[in-house]
Image 1 (cartoon, helix red, strand yellow):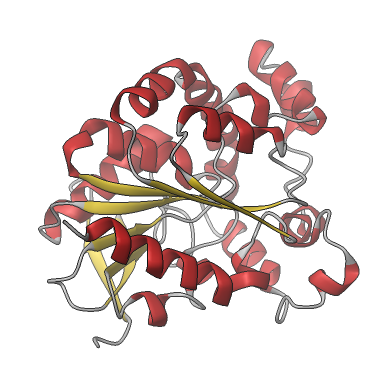
Image 2: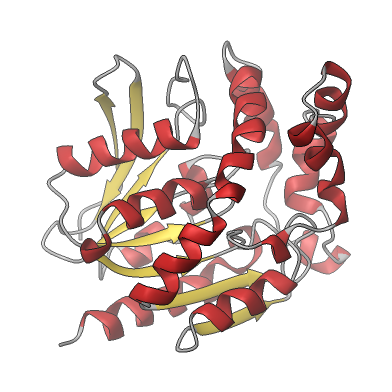
Length: 287
């Protein structure tokens, strides 16, 4: 098995993208896309195991982890960066892991080349209105009326405590105790580097464009019916649990697992999630 290797790619616009690869390149490709406010570090607990059955690719999205920020960050620009990475690595068919901010990116990649999608792994990935709970109200108001005050209200979570809440929010104490260290400290450090906060504000605003594409995403999902595996933390405070039912209605053959976890499910349930992903990849790749 090839050990995880950190690499860098200079994108066509000049920005450097950091990414990890692991496993044999002859195996099915698995693209792991992280969410806010983390990086490829999200997947450190599952990459070694998955590398036994897949060629794992885990990028740091621009402005996260060790990747430099883009001058004009958007989910479309992020998907373009990932497309460049896939081309650089000569990746044909691929499984795509969708999580949080990684969902708009991965869905654009999937929809641009639907015949190359081997399967989707869905973890706290929003693609329906049902995913928006009450805590999104300030964001809705900002989208409809983007004043400075509304932006201030919508971005009030961009603090160290708000970053910690991404990991700990909604979790029972015994589950929260399983999170090792304080990963939000490194996330907060990266967010405060040049271009970091600008990236966060730009993506929050641009998420409105992702929401506007929900009907197009639904058409893709319902028409193509890609093989899919859902892994979801029932205590996720950011995406409502009703979103899981919307995904299941769109993908009636999808295997779905609801865990006693939160938004960053892999921080507490990496072993179980990796086992399910391994089985899904092995089962789906069979003729």
